[in-house]
Image (cartoon, rainbow, N blue to C red; front, side):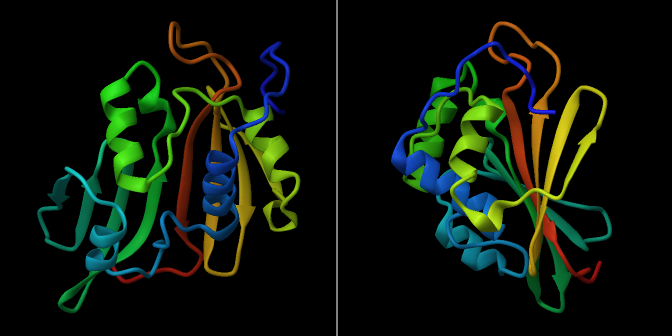
Length: 181
């Protein structure tokens, strides 16, 4: 299911397409992904964030608004176990879109139709999605790699005025191998 929107496929800007295709095919955002240290993530994605550590002190979530990173404590280090690029949060929020652009160096569109992203991914052989799963309100396109699994969640319902059926909700990445918790 590709989330029919009634819109024609638009060409995504080159920098945006390169950024998103690289994120989906490698499971990395600005060079960091599962297995990266907290310090590496902090150097790669700059700007304001909120850290939330669980009561046991074993899991940390760093929320930049447009992206969230999850870390597990491994000894004295925080090691990334997953991350989510929260594209839906950019819709109708120009301040967050500006923060995102400043943090990652690419201006992402406020909304992105799945057929548009899929058209950009089609040129990248490593982006073959092996499963499509209906999650009730979302359609998930899963891509598996050696180091990370990637899921592109596509909105399957209208959320006016910002998001429409078929818009990309998020790009989720998680470690292919379990990390310590």
